[in-house]
Length: 299
Image (cartoon, rainbow, N blue to C red; front, side):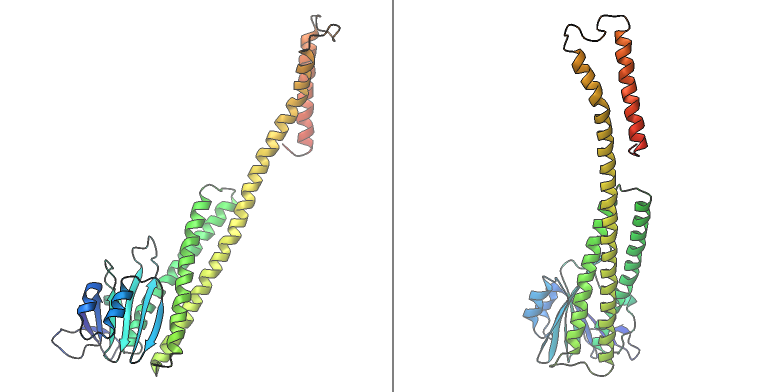
């Protein structure tokens, strides 16, 4: 368990367990049932073990909720915690095996209250997510350039990876915007003063990030359509080549079938120039077919 107090400038300072004046308490999941000062310990212990989305619910005298934002790479840096906001302060419960919150790099809480600390945690993460979206956009630009160059190898896997990450980010931003809107419309413990403006900024930022993620998802759909057209073009080329080869060998197969019948009285079967004449005719047929397909633009 770690205790902090919020300074007048919105910064966190460590507070010892024997000292008063703390307003932010960070706990591990195993410490939640043993924290006597924590209201609603059972409900928080149940929610911290399985955090799947962002939500907030008001109860008389407190606001309880969970926050989950996906990681930027493999999910190892996902932000997940449960919280209780009450008159005593802010209680933050971390799930089992979760990393410590980066409180040392936390921006100044605005307002300088426990609720402002919660908002600063969300602001710290969404500021990094804006850079992640820019990185994903540059990656999609490179995929578009490879498609323009006619290179389709590896596009499907890369596009699906970006699409899954964008879907997870968009879902998290939508939930975060809903959480902020629920706090603004809370009839039990409505935010007051500077806290209301901070929640409004949080809702607007989450909605903006959600819209950017949705725009990038639409970009991927457009690239996927281009990719499908490239694949169909390659398939059409292969089918065209097979059609040309098959058509060229049809008359040669016909000649072979005729001369394989061994009927009496066939044209030049027993004269010295018979074989060269038939071979020359087959070559002329093949060259004529090649010239025809070349003229039609199929080769």
